[in-house]
Image (cartoon, rainbow over the protein chains, first blue to last red):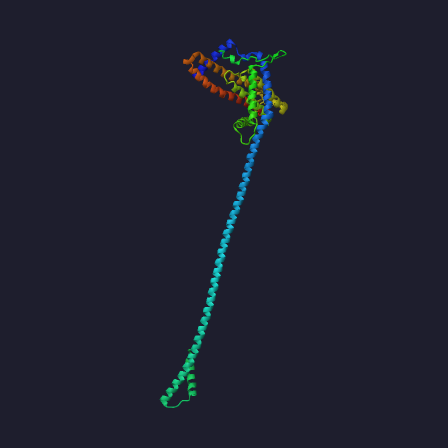
Length: 189
Length: 244
């Protein structure tokens, strides 16, 4: 509605105005001066823009873009460096871990070896002791057998003397006892 | 103050009369506003680009925004071949834009509200684009009038239509700008005179309209400058790339 009203007002007013004075735009007497001054001013503007404004603006925009891309490049290189350092750090860390693990393993081995050695030593000592003890027992056994022979001879002599009143020659008694004991003690030895 | 809404478009000479042969080349109010337009643009852009700092201040930022706005417009419509014409398109856009905006000041003169000014610009563009087209493609630039994929028996008709549309480019380009500017300013003037004639009691409604129209006209001033520049880019694209 508003549109129509304004349009109507505009058309009537414009028509009235055109009737009164006509459009100054259609008066050719001012055309030459307008075109003349347009050429002068526009040519001047074109020169100013082409020679001064355009180089300056494209320069500063290009410079800024360069600066930005430089900064981005720098940031990328720093990032790569950081990445490298991080990898280095990771490697150091894993090396240290490996070293620690090695140390632990070595120490374990050493300890285990020590333990084994000590055990062997003690075992050896024990064995030697055992052998000695066995030897002692054997010696004792032999001694005991000899002692048994002597005692048996004495007992036999006494027994024969008391029973038969015959004085027995100790040598013959001893040989008899020996014979008997050999017969009986065979199984024991 | 003249009450005739068309009197704002009158051209009258300021200062001495300059006459060369039969041509009256006097300095007029129109010339004054052309000089003002060019001076404002030159001073603003030279001042804004004086420091060329890496981090721009506000003025430099505006200059760079205008630069990149036009740069984007050209690369999107005409491609990178149109790069050498960038200063011209930028000048054209800024000239039309600032002339339009200056015309929005009360008691000022709108350079672009005169058909002869817009037609001179459009005609210059038309001739320039035609020269560029023939320089780049030679006689095969005439293929512009022969769209591909058209049946042969239709060709005579199509060629005539294409030729007329090509020849009417400067007319449509100039009339669009001139008519928009003249209509807007006439309307503003009409509403302004309604405010005066209706006085303190009834003048509020037309005043409101005038305020709203001023906002609209500011938008139109920008849009018409943009349209003028982008159509130039499109014509340039036709001449450079021959996309028919």
